[in-house]
Image (spheres, rainbow, N blue to C red):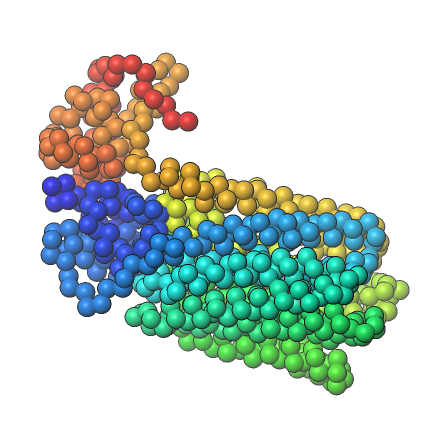
Length: 618
């Protein structure tokens, strides 16, 4: 059988393996394959799979060989395959996230920014409209992508199945329905107060969705045989903050909608909105990203492994710092400015903890594997460092630079710069969080769909547009403290960011389509590239063995003379040869690649090609 002759080593591609020896799927499913990449699996090597799924390479290869030989190693407890519903659960969540960001999220934000530019004031837009947009970004853009990624990836990280996939799928509709109702009705409730009731009801639906999401992930981790690692505690912490902010958001919404007058509303906003944003951005989003990053950078890209003790120490400091920032800000508002020491000291502690943690990952050192997503992830962390530095620099800006160079500005007069504070928030939400979502999803979606990410567009355009837009917004927004002329040019930044997200979103949506999935499941076609004279191009190392033999059958003797004796068997030519490149075959049989190519091309020069016009791929 072909299974007995198929060579298996670290560089064996999973689609090649599963097409030739389907019985190997049992072993890969045991370690988290479970439907990823369709029937032939993702376009990745066994070496990458072993690292990404945290299983020793030699153990994986040994178990696959035993499974093929008919003597599989006994497995005490093999997790059952997940329900089909759980195999591609990320897709509806990712699509919903794209739909939200291109409507209630970035699109609405771009419109708001244009209006601010025209009115030349960040406070000219009704607060309920701004908060509704921000809510859609946190729950729809960030929340839906986090939920989709968690449902799909976390079970596979732990070599288990998603617990309660139907409940998990139900959270999509609770979350999506709740955020649409809440985001749309909040601005309208300012004019028609009775709409506040369904708006708050939508917020309650989100709380239920978050609670079920946490319960499903907790049940999944509890049922896994693989122990928790340091990064898991970041994820669990982020889930806790996710629930806290959802409840906080609902109470805050009800309070602002029922404020008796404008002064009361402004007091609520001034006291409670900044702490809410801290919990949402640094408690939920940043903590989740820091946790997932410790899994992604090392296991996906082969960068240095995080130190568990360092990670746990940073986690403790980060949580204490976040609690100090929230408590310090509220106490400053309610009990006096003496509490600024707690607030600012906690900001310094958070910045130091993030730098201490991320420095240990060495994310800018050479990686074993590089793909189009890595540049997004590395750039995202640049923006995180920028946002933290800006936050640390806030007192110096407010009471030093602003007081000296714009003493007559409104920001200097009230002792608080909305422009500078908003620029900090934009740097972390768009520069850090959005780039991380774009980068991770641009890797996850094609990989889970069985599409080779290395053959896709590098996505430089959306990366450039988003970075230009974010930098433009941060700089020009700060400049509005000094001149109103900065407002009109600031409005352009939102359109650049929206264009970046639209290009990325359409690309990702198409990758997740059924057509793309079906194309990825087809066996590799036998293709012949032609030059202008319609003669075959030189035979290259990355051509399939069968591709060469189909066009030049007489070259079989050349292959055999170089040690490819199994090709005499028609079954081998019809199976293994159709999924193995010349480069890979030479590496497996220890054949001199350059000598073989020279011999094949020399012989092919005197051989006629096949009759008729070969098919040329689109």
